[in-house]
Length: 102
Image (cartoon, rainbow, N blue to C red; front, side, top):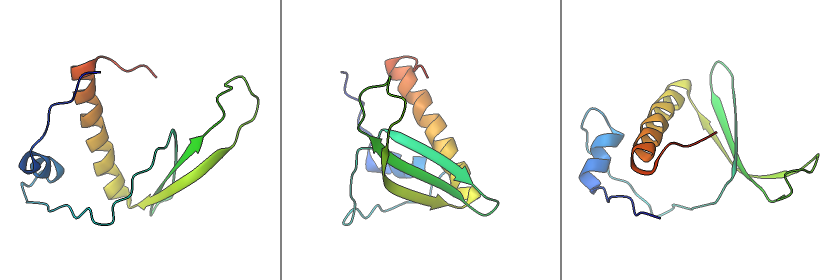
């Protein structure tokens, strides 16, 4: 698998904030988790993202259980910014590695 080109901290900060404002990322409490399932719902006031793990490898099974790991609640404005960020990220990924299916 090809290694993604490294991005400098300054470039990442500029991408994160279109205004060009400098962002300092504090990672002292950062936790990483693997999730292979995502679900989203919304109300007028919030967008709720649920992330979890489906450990059932038998795709033919009629029923399976997903262990929910994280719930992220965003304002619709923050959700829109996340949507734009993900769209740009996927576009860059496909430019480097090819079209994703599905």
